[in-house]
Amino acid sequence: MLYYRLTLYKLRRNMQMAPTTRFPQTYRFSSVFLGLIWPLLHRFSPECLKHKSSKVKGVFSFPTHQPTHHVLLMKLTSAIISVAALFSVASADNVRFNTFYDNPQTSLNNVACSNGRNGLVTKGFTTFNSLPSFPNIGAAKAVGAWNSTLCGSCWELTFGGNSIYVTAIDTVGDGFDISLEAMNTLTNGRAQQLDVVNAQATQVDQSFCGL
Image (cartoon, rainbow, N blue to C red):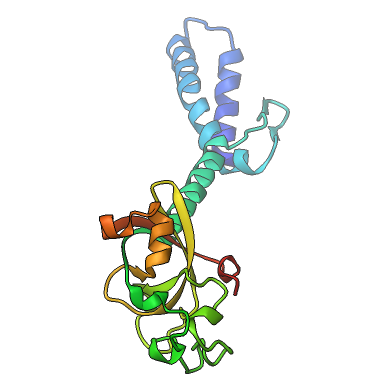
């Protein structure tokens, strides 16, 4: 960068000379060159990005340069990452009802999230109605299998402007199977009429399900 500054300094001195018949082409070239190259050097100079101002022997003064385009790019990247993270959690899934999850006295030993380190029985729950969110319980594909780390995870299901929070206690091959009562709450009493709905599913903190 120092080389460019010294070059510009020499060109500036040439411009300060009277345009005699001996140097007409040099003067015109210097003027055009300085006019074209100066904005580019100033815009992309690393030193301009790092320092508020700098001078070369009092001839040139570099004004403060705020790299607003870099700031905007960083903000845009951050926004894209945030949106990507959001869609990695929220998804559209098929939601059905299964009356198996409506019986309050059914033992949790009959579902995938029974015992084991991550099981609900291990955590002190015994029957379906011992869970705080009952009857909003059911099976979720995310659970996968017995002793899944997602046993007891809480899911917000949204359909037609209604939202419910369901505790995942079992596994299913696709989407969610929830109790008939929970399905009716989600669909305004149309569970049996609709049978299956495509709802927005988002994993949320377990506190939303009372855990």
